[in-house]
Length: 302
Image (cartoon, rainbow, N blue to C red; front, side, top):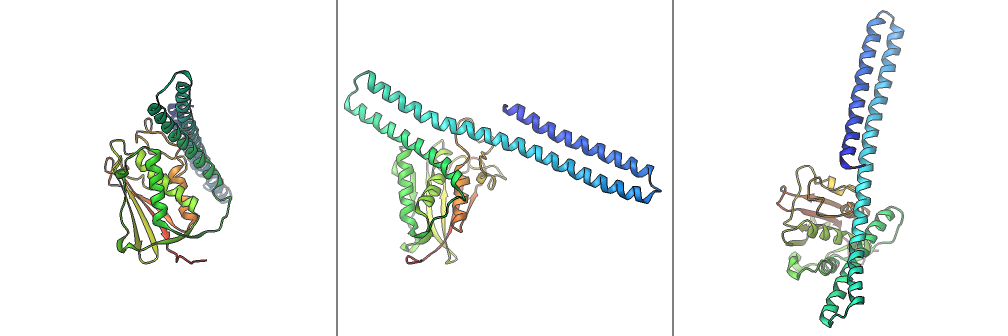
């Protein structure tokens, strides 16, 4: 089912629900007029009307939600297929080139570097999908960890995977040079940081300029702000971008591929760590800031 057909299905479900509601109201009004002197029948008619009307409204809501859910899942499958096929096709192309004709050493090393980057991209996509399936199914012990080195490691990973210069992502110094710790699972928090950074890179098509800051808030929380100068967000999208499979409509969705899982994973990982994730934007073309909040912990916390 293509996008036009899905929109038609949603419109049909809404129109059908409205028509059925109108018919129900008309029949009930007729029932009341015909039986206005029969109190018992009138009460039964009102109860029947309320039940029928509730059923029609709930059925319409259910149908619309199912159509939209199917649409998001189809978009997710298409996106994952693209995210898997693209690096595989690239790796295959370079391997075939190396196999079919002699290549000088410098070119060979460049091919190896590109294939390694594609393999890391493929691995990241698989990990993202697997982690989405694992949410809520595992419970691991958290341990004290220092946030700044984990952020620096995540930034280095994103720079390497996207072949970016070091100045593309700047980690600002922590005020007072204090060392901030949190209780957490390093692998999961690393995934959250990388997903936000990858998103910032992806939606900065005209050039990557990302600022990452780590601050203390109210002496109890560590706040990580990741700010880009990319496409920004239209009004009303700041909360929706954290929904599973959700992608902002019209945000170059046909050109910028993704699974719709990155920020969904971020929010759930932060919630599992008793923190939160939020987004701010001044509007389209004005960049986006993702704010991650984690409770502070002492280095020797149990």
